[in-house]
Amino acid sequence: MTKPARKPQIPNFSSGPCAKRPGYDVARLDLRALGRSHRSSLGKALLGACSTETARILGLPAGYRVGTVPASDTGAVEMALWSLLGPRGVDMLAWESFGSGWVKDVVQQLKLQDVTRHEADYGLLPDLSKVNFDHDVVFTWNGTTSGVRVPNGDWIPDNRAGLTICDATSAIFAMDMPWHKLDVITWSWQKVLGGEGGHGMLVLSPRAVERLESYTPPWPLPKIFRLTSGGKLMEDIFAGSPINTPSMLCVADYLDALQWCDRVGGLAGTIARSQANLKVIEDFVATHPWIHFLAQAPETRSNTSVCLTLDLPAEQVKALAKLLEAEGVAYDIAAYKDAPPGLRIWCGATVEQSDLQALMPWVEWGYGQVRG
Image (cartoon, rainbow, N blue to C red):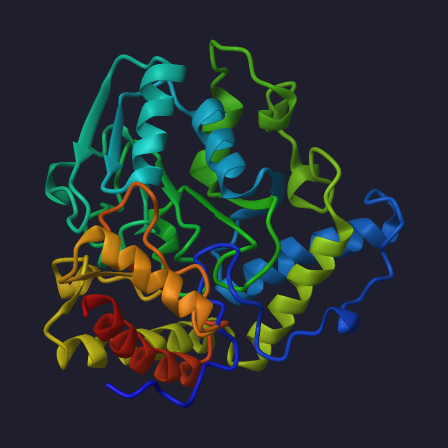
């Protein structure tokens, strides 16, 4: 195959930090809060907007709290696990590296005894019908390193006794989420809206707040994990006063991303952009028999972290990713280190469909080059 002439205008296809929004210009950010205290009236107003604007665009139910927390999605998940788990048994779901990490934390760090593990290999989901919702349930919505997502929320009952704790970092703003079935939702700014790293978002349902105010964990809680004081929720966390000092530059960047979200049609617009991006890769895979989705069931294919396997030895797959980077057409698309060898192409809303259309002929050309 002849080397393609057209290259993606923005070759950033990393699964985190993800591509900035189209037309992004750091010089256009609202930088009034730089050098100001995050506890000033301006700082609190901007941080409060991170919560209220997020809730508005996502359409969160009344009574759901939204707060900015430390340490990205990881920090948000750990806050939930350490603060909420203990009074019930726990069902843990894992089908890729991040879900497996939460299992390890609950079993080896919290050392909970009544833990049921539902695990599956890369490319598959565990049997969701076997999950016990009398227990608390911890799961990822979208497996970022496997490209496998839960297809919907139908498997989660409305009358569950336990809490559902959902790591949704590569799903929020890209997939329809049944909010009323989720009690804790976490994500980071660096994913679907292309924000900066280091900050997480934590959403609590009224049921989660009730647990926090009625249960005290038996283990010590580090300061950055504490969500209550005197047996009551620390409401300030969800009203513009986070636990520790955030980057006000990152705050400005996130608010810019939310404004862009509005301009492309809100949540429906960002979901549509991501699904259109996935369609480009689906069409390519359908006509090239040497490349495959790692997700074995079509309904479980991620439309953000799209993971692909190729009919090549692992060394040649790595060579392909390096070749495309050297050509300046695709950066950071090698599969996650713990995943099967392959490519992982981010298709979230900030990626332009035209750039994916330009990329795929290069994947075909590169395949021919490394295959020899």
